[in-house]
Amino acid sequence: MSSSARYMTLSNLLTTVNLFGGFLSITMTVAGHYAAAGWIIILSGLFDALDGWIARALGQNSDFGLQADSLADVVSGGVAPSLLLYEYYLNGVGNHMALGLLLAFLPLLFAAFRLARFNVMTQHNGHKPYFTGMPAPMAAASLASLVILHHHFGWPILLHCIVIMTPAISFAMGSHLRYEGFPRFSFKSSAGNRFKLILFFCTLLCLFVSLYITLSVFIMLYFLSGPAKFVYDLFAERGVGEELLETEEFVVDQRLQ
Image (cartoon, rainbow, N blue to C red; front, side, top):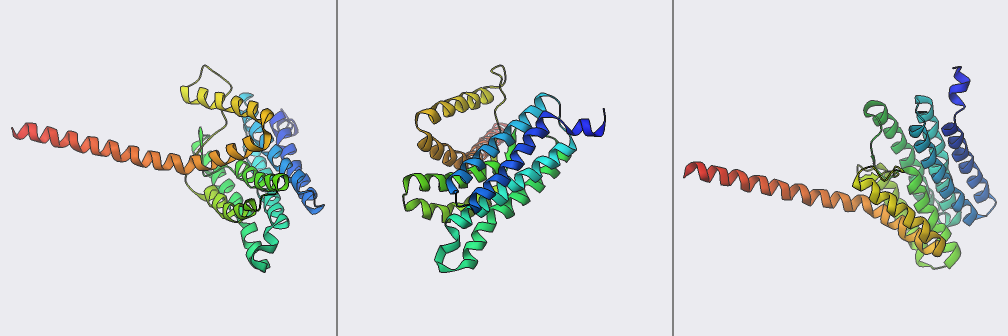
């Protein structure tokens, strides 16, 4: 197979669509179509999920695909949301341009950092069923959804949420919190994957019933799932440690008797 044929795969085509979505979102932001720019960021994230899933399903994984996917994510999951947030609201935060620039730069900074870390970890350890740090496309979709919701509802509190959630979601990308990956489309897999698959289809159904409410709830729950899992694992490990300590103490007492 020629080198050009290896690059012309379905998964790489979807990566190209993801990259074009980031570029298109930027042009929409510059033109002042902020809600459209936000929706395009979300759609780009869907194409990013699809290209990875198809690459694994069809055996099209490659170093080229990994690097191209990350470069596309830097645009659609880093540059596009950062520019959207800055142009939509952050350029006027505190009547000080420098503060708005700093806040708007955070999603791009941590998206690039996270994607570089992801590439290194994947090349050394292979693909994992979970993500270390909030995935850049999901983080971008979360931030874009705040713009979409404010544009639709006009609630002033959403502008405050943009200021608070921009650094919070950015730091979640750079963290070591574990986030669940895209479900595999098989009900013969593990119980955890079946649960994610059912949740995925339920979310799609709810999107048709109440698009904006479902979008906001899903995005927020996914963002919180990382810290929630960290806290749960922390208490679970502490509980296991206490049980082991009690068992060791019981064994020692039995020997002494």
